[in-house]
Length: 348
Length: 110
Ligand code: SF4
Ligand code: SF4
Figure 1 (spheres, rainbow over the protein chains, first blue to last red):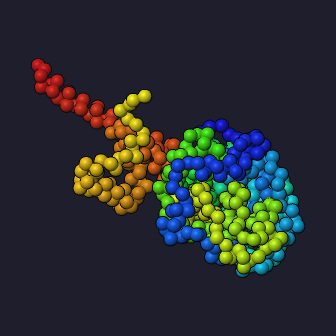
Figure 2 (cartoon, each protein chain N blue to C red; figure 1 turned 90 degrees about the vertical axis):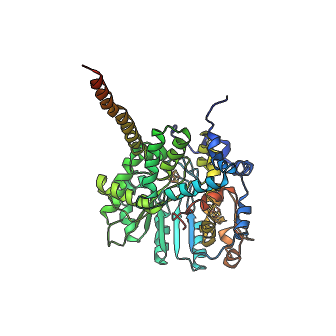
Figure 3 (cartoon, chains in turn brown, blue; figure 1 turned 30 degrees about the vertical axis):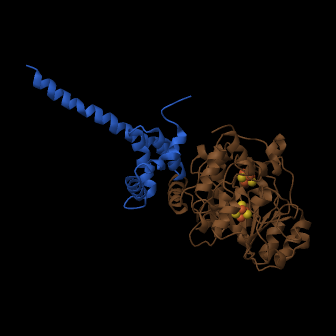
């Protein structure tokens, strides 16, 4: 446990805000190469098998500065997607048969074009996921109607809650975050989110508050449901357990707490070939705030663009992207450990 | 600094099989089976192991089962309560022998 952070690594002028430095660190550790592991599992090169999900990161601006954030998001980050780039994303989406558009950030709701974009996606009858950090709903009055807005467009809400108490939650996400999250969850429940037969989905995300791996998803879900209901009268649909990947602020935490080598060894030892065959990048495209295309949000944060001739949404070439080889590196061990991990929780 | 216990030695536990492979294998197979889901869940067994680690005061086990308990989603309060269970049993086991002392005392007294 340590002190809370208030600024992004970029604003601190921290060396690890540079992706090159992060990649060097990942390469330097004496660990078996991820590509070799894939070869041993007959999965190399890892290839795309479709584009079912568009995960769009509409900006790095966030009202929180979580300790483990792989985006290095925060109030001091000003990079957000313009409406022009959103239009290019819509054109690209129209060229695919994708079922789902997953909006992430930062706090995606802070982008002034967020509601416009959601309405456009909703008109296309896509399943819309919003990675809502909960506290944004109560951050100021202009966001208080987000639950109603989500409901209107049948948005699926996916929200982080690292634990059912304030100690662990606040240690990771900032002081006071737990209480505000509970308030926001109650507002979501009040319009029907997470309630039986409402059809409005509210899923929670658990990720470890430290240098250890997540537990079995279904087992922890039972405990989360019981505790949140008995202590706060809160309901939700599913709990996703997610492994922290050694990127950006989480990588910085691992180094500063001297847990880096031990954590990486743990990930390597827990390598699971079944999880490796189902990693989310095989069916996902990730778009950055400035319109570049990546295999996943993690590769995006390491600036590892897709292996395709055209890497920008303005020159979107679906055939080329469908035939791409996925760029992997040592951070990928985070997706293949144990039951595997993706933005939708366990893989196996 | 030389110490009797080196945290790195835990990773070498499996090496005990090198000098007696047959018994080593039997032990590690058995150990693995014990921690599988059964009438008790793997998760419940982890917390029992954490308590027992403290009762037997094995530093390797304490490190290993603290980490395992965290990975099973237990929090500080739950883990400390498990340690108190171990402590209560150990303390109780000491104290209950006081009855034996009392018996002996009475036997030898007028
Ligand atoms: S983890 Fe999410 S809520 Fe926390 S700083 Fe990053 S983007 Fe914001
Ligand atoms: S980090 Fe990205 S590229 Fe690597 S395995 Fe995970 S989803 Fe795929």
